[in-house]
Length: 125
Length: 110
Image 1 (tube, chains in turn green, purple):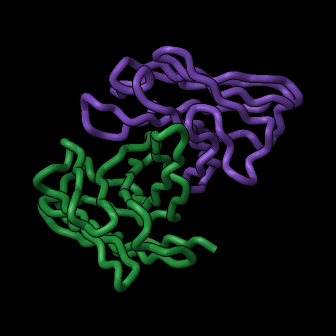
Image 2 (cartoon, chains in turn cyan, blue):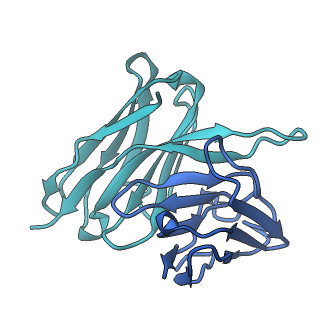
Image 3 (cartoon, each protein chain N blue to C red):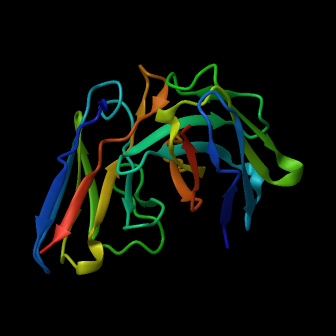
């Protein structure tokens, strides 16, 4: 059974830092691209970051670029999100998400096929 | 403000067919496939439709997706009470070089 379990969420003061972790199991972690997506209380989904299979290619949303860093450790089946200079507007549930590719006719678009249960980050003084 | 637009709410009675729209542009829906996600109350989102109209294993065939030009739609037939959820469309946006989501449509089963 595919499982993504996030941890590391906490109450942190503005300007502080947090490192989120996601433990993956039930599938070959090193064979899947991964993402972080967040959801502020009562709001919609907000894509944050992407990392490729080896961790050599990343993509970070403009809204958090320069403050958030995504990484992975395939030996530990783990995904990470380092968050610095946190702001009140970063308060949200943070989801670890797996991307699968669905190839058809030479094209391989992706979709977020498994989501963790999320970890809550609260930025407040 | 998202670059893809969904109506904030939709409703229907049990057994009815409802559709949820997702409107975008050539940089997202018009040029890339659309995925749909279902978020039940208090739960994480779940993939409902991928590649515009394909269902993952386990998703009932009551759910269907379509795309035309820069718009996409999710249709739910034979509406059931357990379909009450928020539904999000989510294409790739080539101009933003980012995945984007619509604002979500809250479906109420009356």
